[in-house]
Length: 385
Image 1 (spheres, rainbow, N blue to C red):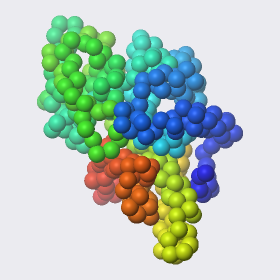
Image 2 (image 1 turned 180 degrees about the horizontal axis):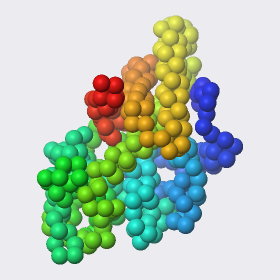
Image 3 (image 1 turned 30 degrees about the vertical axis):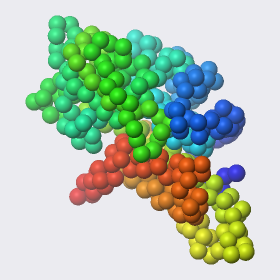
Image 4 (image 1 turned 90 degrees about the horizontal axis):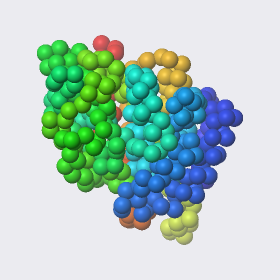
């Protein structure tokens, strides 16, 4: 049961509601029973292939590339329903694949790149990863040190990327490189690099505080040779392309984390009804009722700003201030809600067998990835002064 308060201006119509029901049935049947297992082992590639077969990986992708041709809000529905399944790691892995890698290929790629990668990604035959963060460059994308140097008709790439979601399972990495160190923001180029290219090495799978269902890797690139056909868009245009990508990533992250916090909230309300303390249900104590009221209010506000931002983005507006506010508020709200959910569960909330402990560990990443809180605050602040 979900305790959502319906927003006054939902962006969804009957088609979205039907899609939601279809995804929800799939999630309940094929994801929910395995959530605890996947937190120990990471989610299997088979679930990605299954989602591809059902058409869930290309909801907004044009039909000529194997997608469903839906609108942007279909992506929001998918993020919310996967989050409701309770696996933050699966949500993260899928979001990178469907909302961070494939959209830039569709936006900037050649016809050959779209046919080669988008179709395979939509069908779930392959998964992709995004290579931005480096050991010495994260939020500061301009600090990227991975270099791509022209060599005849192609390029040679050297460097490393870290904290790469899907890094151990991906067939291709969308790689941010520096091609002209003296050109500032015009010195970046993005390459689509198959992970089986000689010189690409997954150095190790990284252990994380949360998101255990998702694999994360440190990847090295040593004299990796790629052809000119590996360039995404134009040489030197990579910084603009990745900034474009980040706006969509931040919006979808806000939608997913809000739904994931709602999942924890729903679990907590049910627990508060069932758990008895001092002779009555936990939820009958005023202190707990007030916590629930506060969380419900903040979740409703977060969902409203997510939907308003999604409508703006879907209408073609590129409102960086609004997107940054949305990402900041939604992720901080989810973090507070997850913390309160653990508190209401008491000792049980600290136990791995209770879902709220997993949510607590998982949601913390959202205040770091896709632009840390501090970066979002600076972007918002600069837009005023």
